[in-house]
Image (tube, rainbow, N blue to C red; front, side):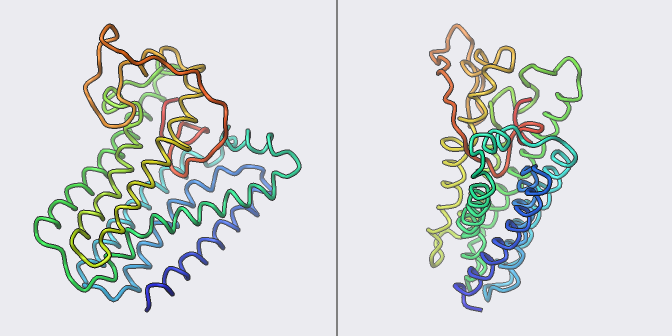
Length: 290
């Protein structure tokens, strides 16, 4: 199958899936289920690319297992966190801000998820259409990055769940495990996951395109919809969060600074909307500080 046709079919399927979720949220007035559907469908695109692609079997197997396992784990996690709960406050805020135009604008918001998914799926389509297999060092490096990202993200989720389950942790900053070294370790490991496909595709035809997904994901999380939106709220709702910002890396896990050594000051939060197709806190998105 030509890669252009495969991408078009995948995009059409994403539009249908997100359109169906949009119809459901018209009735429920809860847009939060777009999050697990986003993860499940993008994992499905990985499996589709592996099946439809004419590339080397090893390439297609890596895409199916890597993308499929990522989408299944994240989708299940988000489904469990969002099912039966109130609407994500960010979506509720958008609905309130948009007023009577909310249904139409929410549809555009959902369709944007399809565009983002296709951009990220470059990581799947490029290797699935490559007839050459990577070098042994590239295979080892990609697998190491992929396993580390999957394990790290799952560990950060478990640590946050444990923090939330502890009555003493409610309303306080989570500093367990990875959260001691990064304010958003889940974001870091999520971006790292997409780097595995870049290493796998290094030196192959069109392999340079696989740089786009990890860069796009990191930009979305750090500059658009992840860190800015979360921290604009958390500085007001979590005891000690400003101090946490001053001593703890925002993204890459790093030993925390002592407060006296910190030169970082909290910036007054900006009030704006946006999306995070993957992470956040309970009923506010599934992976960040409660």
